[in-house]
Image (cartoon, rainbow, N blue to C red; front, side, top):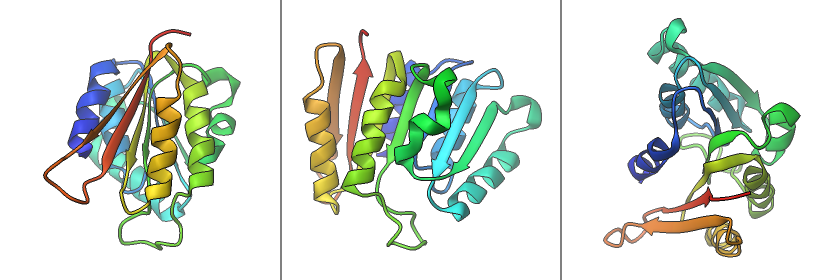
Length: 185
């Protein structure tokens, strides 16, 4: 399913854009975003676990030459603090804001996203994304309350948004990809 998310992100991202990975985890989504926005772009990566931030930093340094790397901001904090991390300068200018909900594979499962923190993060993301931009949430069926909250929030968006949901129907426990595009202000 991450491949499907990447296809969707690539449809809206251009070199020089601003992208945000709200749950950077192992850094693979951050790397994809960094490659898509290129050296003239900006990427913010956030995770509540320092080991995830460190892994993301190492991956970016290994995979991207200095002259190919966008301006990168890595923060060890909760994804609900997006607006604080972005600051006034970047609110309303993010082209893609990505969330991959749940916990970091191989790490402490008690440090997982929650309905409360994710609701705050999604509401902040909807404020921070620009016209033509996208908020992307990869939700897992193992946390049904979080999935239902994202579904409900995206379904309630007004006409200035388009929202979709994608799920692999032949995989019982496949994650659900929820996307919301800002069509107008």
